[in-house]
Image (cartoon, rainbow, N blue to C red; front, side, top):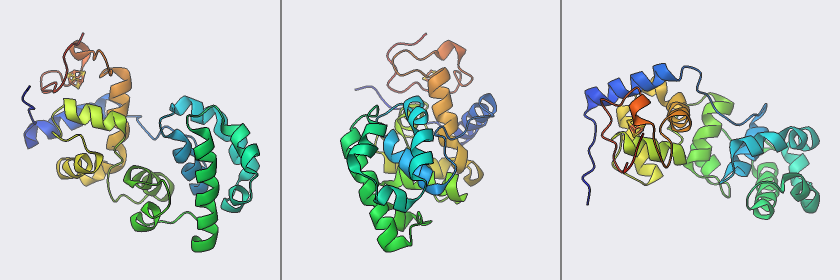
Length: 219
Ligand code: SF4
């Protein structure tokens, strides 16, 4: 089995600095105005491309607006508005169920703590971190999505594949001031250069640092 190489802390710091410089405008990728918009968009985004979610959410946000709007929604009508996303039927049910809990237990507001958020159905640490960072400007951890998993592993910022363990590794390596943005930097790098199947290593700003863990072919 191929040996996984980790960057030492000086190299990790340098790699992160170079990536941050390469993507100065990296930011959260789903459009929203309110915490409830963000919660709904985050539920819709599971295994669905951002561009699809961003296409359907303006009409959805305009129609339902608040937790009670979604809690009282007609399920089939809601489903008809989101049927371009994967697992649309489950997501429609989840949105309604989650918003009913928000009404019953949180006065109709999206909670502002990790504990309360992760107690909601279908909300894991990734989504909770995303909501805390982007809706409330509270940084408790680092959202770990599929791009973060891939890029952090390849670059030797972690040897883990489990999101919670990756988050833990990244919070040790990445300066806390960067926790709120590092996921979006890694995702931007994945989109632009560190492609899933054929990364463009020859064009990569960290190609002299990156151990390329798990990369079999590259350009
Ligand atoms: S593109 Fe290649 S060198 Fe750059 S981060 Fe990805 S695997 Fe590493």
